[in-house]
Length: 383
Ligand SMILES: *Cc1c(COP(=O)(O)O)cnc(C)c1O
Image 1 (tube, protein in one colour):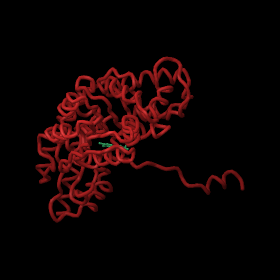
Image 2 (cartoon, rainbow, N blue to C red; image 1 turned 30 degrees about the vertical axis):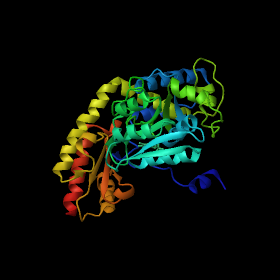
Image 3 (tube, rainbow, N blue to C red; image 1 turned 45 degrees about the vertical axis):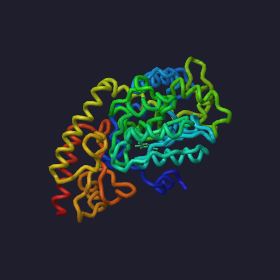
Image 4 (cartoon, rainbow, N blue to C red; image 1 turned 135 degrees about the vertical axis):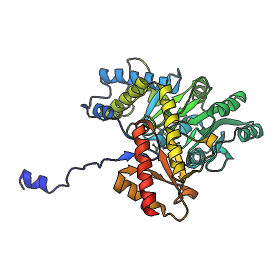
C-alpha cells in the first residue's frame, strides 16, 4: 500500500466544535493559554523547565495566599489532588470529620473510608452551606478527630461555605483542616495562611480556566508535620508527597519521580499570569458582580435558585426549571442551537435543575448576555 492510500484509510482529524462553556467546568480557555500549550515539548528536567516550575510554584502560592513550601500541581485532575491530600494526611484508624452537603463532600467521605479512616459525617441538605455550628458539635463529640475536611464551593449545588469560620473552629481544637478549593480558587476569596487552613487542593479547569488535568495542592507546616510523623507509608506510591517533592521541591537539584505533563504546565503558567495581570481580588469581584447580573436575568426569566441568597456561589448558578419542562432535550437545544454548554443536575436534582457556570474566562458580560438570550429563547419556544 502506498503512503497516500494508507493515509486516506485513517480517520479524519478531530475538529473541536466551537462552544461557549458555562457548565460546572471546564470553562473557556484563553487563546494565550492554548498558544502556550502549543509550544514545543521540552524535557521535564530541562533547566528552562525547572525555571518554569519555580515560577508556577510562586504563582500558585500567590493564588492560594500562602507561603507554604509544599505547593505544587499534582499531575492529574481535581480528584487526583483530592485523593493525594487524603492519602498523605490520613492513616488507617485516624478519625476524620467530613462535611457533606453535595457530591464532592460524598467523594471526600468515600476516599477517607478507602484509606481505612474512621469517618464522622456532618450532613447538611444539598443546596445549603455547611453549618459551622454542626462542625463545632461534631468536633466536641469527637475529641480524637485529627482532620476536618469540607468543600468550600460545592459545584454540585452552587453553595458556598464559610471557609474562614469553619477553619477557625478546627484550629481552636488543634484539628487539621483540609479544604476542597477546586471551584473556589480564583473565583471566591480564599486565604490559606490568614485563615489557618492546613491543606488545600484545587483544579485547573474551573476558575483558573485551563484545560483539565492538573490539580494544585498545598500543605502547611502542621499538615507536613503530620505527614512526617506517619507510622505507615502513604498507600499510593504515585501520590506520596514525600517522594514527589524530590521533583517539585525547591532548588536546582530535581530528580525524576514521574514525567510531568510539560505542555499542560506551560498552560497553567500562562493562566496564572492572566489571573494575576487582572489581579486576584479583581477576579473575585468580577465573579460576584457578573453573578449578580446573571441572577437578575435568570430570575426575570422565572428561574429560581436552589440556594438561599446568602449562601450562593457566584461561579455556579443552580436554578430550578419550570414545572412541566423536560430538562434534557432543552439543554441539548442550548448546545445545538446556541453552542452553549450548561450542566444538568446530579443526584436528587437530576432532571430538575441547570447548573450554570460563570468561571474564569467564562465569566464575562458576553457570557451573561449569551446565556440569558439562549435560555430565554429555548424556554420561550418550549413554552
Ligand atoms: C470538579 C470538582 C472536583 C473534581 O475535579 P475533577 O477535575 O473533575 O476530578 C472536586 N471538587 C469540586 C468541588 C469540583 O467542583
